[in-house]
Image 1 (cartoon, rainbow, N blue to C red):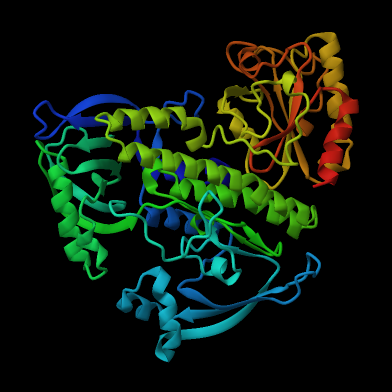
Image 2 (cartoon, one colour):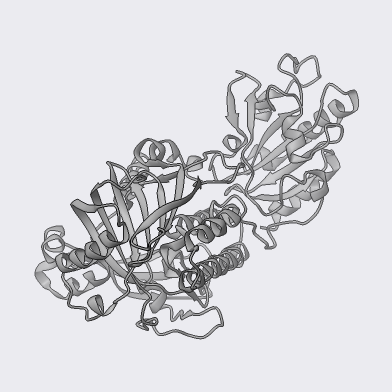
Length: 547
């Protein structure tokens, strides 16, 4: 996902590469902890990068701003919304029917007030804090404004539990569900600070650490006495002292002190989901605005980005007149079930944490290993009208509804190695990936040539709605012209599958004698599969016309 929007390399260069996970449990005399198990943090062998990238949210935001700036887009802050209305719910797609009144605040007043983001609207009533007020007309509005979403509340969208019961915005969970978190530079003799550590301390309960860039770590821990922070009057300094006293005991017999604390907070573990992800087909919510869960599965920002990634191309298609509102309906159809799955996983982790088991860390590691395909995004499968359940048997390794898998291939033009994922950069176009098989076989070559010639003459390829790519099952030395393939520019980048001819085809379970073609959505998920036969292209053109 990040690679396809051009940010992957920047994130890899900036972030900490997390490879290792270690579990700790009570030592023999229960006076402290001991290491019990270790393993890979990313056990999914199908992942392109077998590690997590960890970096501060402010650095992610900075990189996103830089990326947007390169496209001539500036993010305006600090701005808070004040009023919202839909002028004409039944207006056509090209009308600006959503009006939002926004207040631009003076940056210096925001800095000196030290108010959190969720309270900045308080400054909008102070005249000296205002820079300007403006009303904005838009075709669509997307609320990515967090768990206390102003947009969600303006639309009257409720937050429910998984049973469908409406939960009040300010409801509190049961005692014992308050957690603390802290970013710090540790002074410690703890042996594995560069790993993700899951610690079950006999002295304070569950503690977890995640390394961060600059030899820093984030520590999470469950607060056994939540009355210490529940009165709402705890200062940042007091909270840091409370958390550090708890956390340091959790690492015994090792010492743990902080040289530099840059952030600390406490939160209540809860699971909620929005009753709907949209309003009047004009307003959408994404991220924490539509699903709330604890950070125990490490899915907050990751999952929120996947929401936006799913919605963005659908909004673009609607704005450009390539699709109607029915396409926008698939955002909720696809992402809400994923949100429920995530919340169920979070609840399973919560049940594990509350259990009397003496091996919670190892069970937690096993649970994440089982769910790795989902949490990494590799195994997320969309089930909507955009996934056509035909011809799966032609390419069982290209699972309909799932993201195109990583596999190493060689570019035909340069013999340089790349990933199959590199063929689907985020260009707001569908990609028709053709796996024709062994085109040196006369019948296979003839079918392939006819197929790409029919593609090349179509208006869908001509106007850029569909881009073509071919992954060939041939050896390095095969000369395409001798195989009768002379339309390389149409293919954009002819490719073969590496040093062992046919290995990719075997992994995707595609026959080298009959082949298959897959239509991949702009967000990288496989939409449909067809045989490599020119008559079957009508299925592709029909699919695109009905978006």
